[in-house]
Image 1 (spheres, helix red, strand yellow):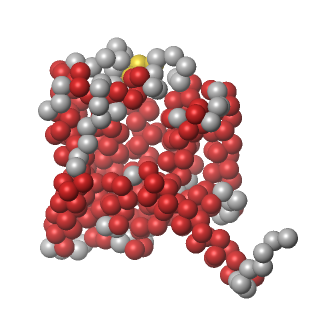
Image 2: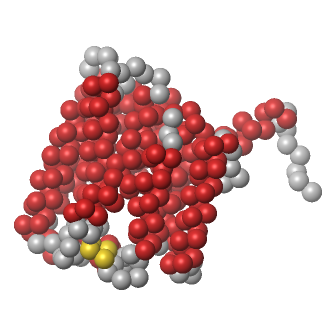
Image 3: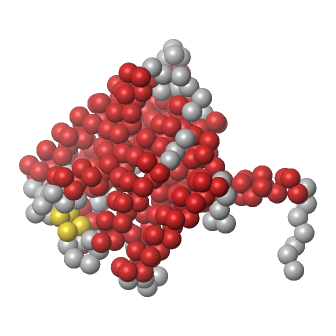
Amino acid sequence: MTPPSNDNPGESLGRFSRAADTASTEVIRTYSTSFGLATRLLGQRHRQHVRNIYAMVRIADEIVDGVAAQAGLDASAQTEALASYVAETHRSMRVGYSTDLVLHAFARTARECGIGEDLTQPFFDSMGADIADATDFTAYDAEAHERYVYGSAEVVGLMCLRVFLRDETRTDKEHEILEHGARQLGAAFQNVNFLRDLADDTERLQRGYLGESGLLTDADRDAWVRTISTQLDDARRSIPLLPKDARAAVRSAQALFESLTRRVAKTPSATLYERRVRVPDPIKALLAARSVLVTAVERDR
């Protein structure tokens, strides 16, 4: 027998939705201290929406990057699991409800902020490519890399941008600048993560995202660092166009990855294949504090 609820019938959905938000927040707390810190710098009206986006994409990523395989699912079963997740994501976006707490939370965010399948499907396509490549070592050429990064990272930046701008008015030119900045920031995040995760991607996942050979030299690393730096510079120029209650968080995330990029640039490529480069927690806290101070003295739009 189901335990009785103290809610009135009309309040039950609200209670369920709060539980869904809590589930999404817990996903962030468990998987990413850096992203969790950045979301705490967001204005209250944005914070939970961005957490809901992160939780959805995090779980999809886990289907293809280890959890499903460790649970005993082969590539075919992983493909089936991802397809089921995609179908339920899109169904919940249409109706505004899912029995999956994380997808229920994401669906509410998507419907409120205008996130559609034009952004979610490219993301899932990139996740599906990871399953297809899981059995043999696969090195991505330039075209495949660009396509993968758009789906796995740039569209996530665009999802967050739709959260930030849902109650805002911007000119067409400003929208263009902001969308370019969101895509560039997402691409930079993904590319620097490829560099710092060379060991895991190469040995465990059998993927070479940054070149056809699958093996990077110091010169290759330097070329990718230049690309990432350009992407971060492009993204930085768009930040003043964001609502003020989103800027500190975006600045903090960008500053973190700038710091990470500098550390990667000083690390021999051979070492990148042996260990993951990290930014110490005290440095993360300092970068976040600086971002808050810079934003505090800025004029609002």
